[in-house]
Image (cartoon, rainbow, N blue to C red; front, top):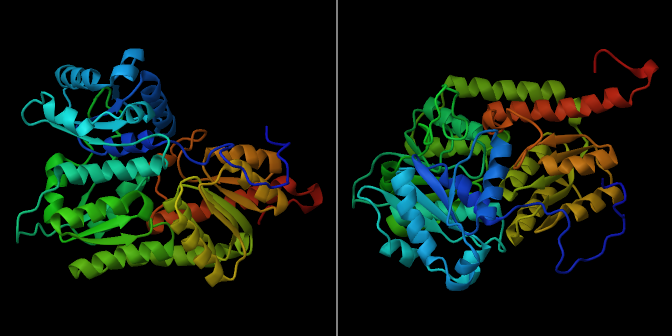
Length: 454
């Protein structure tokens, strides 16, 4: 346990304790699952692939399939060319995917395998696709890997036909759960805006139980849809860290205008997504969405005394943390510790601007770890922690409630089916925050102060 974490903070060099991130290949593997009929392939050792599959399986409570080049000592010395060519042949002949999406690992990156050249020389069956993203484990985080794989989808697949628009809006949803992707698609459907979402893991990692195992479930963005994304009028990238690289690549390759927005967690970010869709297409906002927004505002009014003025510490993936910080500031909470494990100075700049505008003094760090995050809390305690499952050790040590949002959530179920984005998602986040704080009040109350109604 972490009861003995010291309060004294000192600068660590070349050392990370309890990282607040994981490695690039996991993010790339998750993005690849968002292509219909795709088998993610890890170009490295079996151990790497097993860890990545296990981590995703535990978060989604669904079997995650992926193949591997199965590096041995010989591959480490002489390179992985032979392994990858053999793997491509075997995977297409045995598992019959439509697409193989290759991500690299620290080993293949250190060796310096030229994956693009290997793919060009490989025997690829007609009508099948192989694409790749370089995802060295020792640089960036799983969000960087997700971003690199999305960019690879555009690089390999997107095409434009001059002067012909398909009348669609592309949406790159970022590293969010399939429940969030379904909610974003539902909002676009209510607005009657035709969209192409990629990657789209809904229907893949939340596929229904039918009694029959489907290696390639019905969900995912189809190759022809990603190819056609080059003919869209606009690309909305939700979350700068996970999605903007793909949107900018699409602009560079096919001249599709990019619009970079926050992950739509909370009322303000959801408003901006809806208004961007309205501005791009000229549609009217339907009553259903106005009603949902009104319900959310009503809930915020009714429950504000549960959380207003409470001090909160937030950690996790940068796009999720940025959106959550904006949301909790909007409901009157004070985010005084904000941290992501993903490196990127712009994260600190954006959060500090939000805190300064709200008049809140807080600590902010990108590329940080949970050891330092815990030390911050020891020195300046908070009422609530928001982050992934790894926050439970700090929560237990300091007796502070934890609201689990982000990746990975390994000790709770169903969460990946239920959205935190959109107005509906904001209602759910409010419920989680309120209930966590009210449970704490009940637990800490003496018998004479224990109340039926809070």
